[in-house]
Image (cartoon, rainbow, N blue to C red):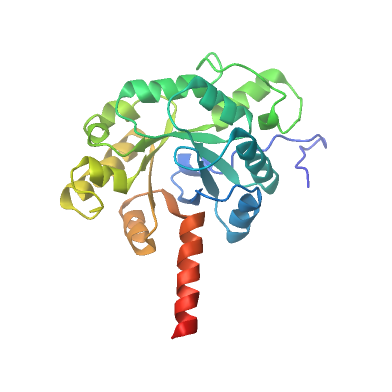
Length: 266
C-alpha cells in the first residue's frame, strides 16, 4: 500500500532506522551475502529485521541484481544498506540512486576516508553528489526538488567499518567527520589486524572494540558490530552496541541445515 500524506499525495519512503539510531535505540539487521534474489528482502522483513546490508565487497552481486533487491526492500519498508567495495564515486552514487538508504565503507583507516564518503553521499551544499531525482531512490514520486534533496541528505546513513588497528588508533578523528552515523566493527578483520586472526575474544581486540563503543558514544555516532554468535552479540549489546548485525543469509542456511540434520540423525 502506498504511504500518503495528510492531503492524500504519495509520500517518499523515509529511512526507518535513521531516527532510531539518533535517539539511542537499538536496531537489528543482517548481511545478505549469497542470495541474488529480491526474495531475500521479503524474508528478512518477515523475520522482523530493521535492516539488511548487501555485501558488495565480497558478494556476487552485480548492479542490476542490487537494484532489484533494493527496490523490493523499499516496497516492503525494510531499510536496505550496501557495503561498497571501496571509496569510488560511481559506487556511492550508483547504489544510492538505485535505492540504498545507506552505505558502509570497509577498511576505513583515516579521516580522509570518512570525509570522502560523506562528500560523495550527500548533495550540495553538504557534499558533491550529482542529482538524478527520477531514479529509484525517489520511489518515482516527483514532488518538490528542494524537499527531496533535504530528505535524501537527512535520511542516508553513512557507516564507517572499523576493522583495522590503525582505524582504532585514529578513531576520534575518523568519527568526528560530520555526517558519519555509525561505526561498525568487523571483529574478524580487526583480530587479523592485531595479529591474532580469529581470536575476537583476545584482550587487545576486546579493548579495541570497547574503545569503538566509548568514542562513538562520546561523539554521537552509533556503535555497531557484526557477528554470527548470538551469545556474543548479546554481550556486546549489553556493553553499549546499538547497531546489531546478526549473521548472514549463508550463515542462517548452514546453521539451520546442520541443526535439523543433527536432530534427524540423533
